[in-house]
Image 1 (cartoon, rainbow, N blue to C red):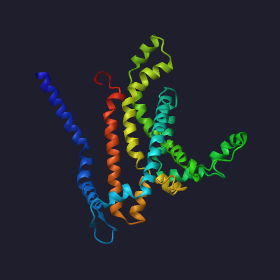
Image 2: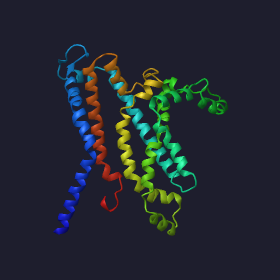
Image 3: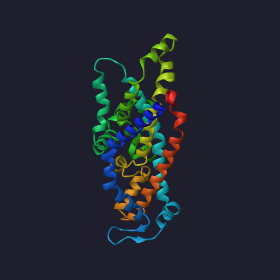
Image 4: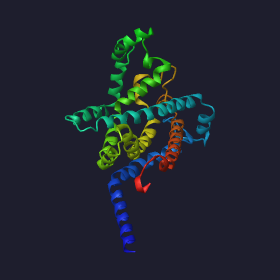
Amino acid sequence: MAKTISIKKLKKQENLMGYLFASPWLFGLIVLGLFPILASLYISFTTYNMIAAPRWIGFENYRILLTNDNLFWKSLGNTVYHVVIAIPLGIVVGVSLALLLNNKIKGMSVYRTLFYLPNVVSVVAMSLLWLWLFQPSFGIINQLLDPIYKLLNMEPLRWHQAEETSKITLIIMGLWTAGGTMVIYLAQLQDIPTTLYESAEIDGANWIKKTYYITLPLMTPSIFFNFIMSLIGGFQVFTIAYIMTSGGPSRSTYYYAYYMFDKMMADRAMGMASAMAWILLVIVLILTMVALRLNKYVVYLGDEG
């Protein structure tokens, strides 16, 4: 009985400390964020051009978007394509980098820093850099690939300037910041007990088996966390398309957030833009809840799982 009471007391203390550490964010959300959130919900049921007062029209914005707006579905489809391709690739690259940089050799901290550095570069600067790298005529990437083009007797890829390769170009560019997730994977890797690997070596397990049966299962919590964060961020992709392609060519990179931006700034349709924001919230919320439901089937939690 005393043990049960002490455990409950410990959990209360942990919850209190959690709220204490989260209090600055909670303060910002309640004081600075709650009113804009509720205001956007109200505006989504109105027609509002930021000049005249909002006029209540009920669910009309939602009806138009869902049943009578081809660009809405086009932009959502482009975003879903980006999310479906970019997230698995990002996880593979991030985990691979973490495995590579987990080796204990001289100067490894320098390499870790170099791989993380792209994450401190502004997205605008990064987009301008990759715009130059992917330039079809004189870009470094096509210059490096020139021997392959000649061997295959093919024209150089136009990358972001061609409809068929524009989405893939932006996804490849996004992999440059895989060092951000790599840090989280690396922290999880270094938390794995070395005794597990030693036991596996005694049983004759090679590197591949140790990675498959020990490393990857014990990394699933961090993989799942990065998956959720990438899912949320993936549906908000905007800046790279805005800088590199302006949503083109032929609206192939016209993402959902880009369309919402145009509704707000170009069309001054704040009601429609707010409705799009709330539709996006519902989509991401549903997908996140589904992922959390599947958590127990894909994440290894040891004896607690």
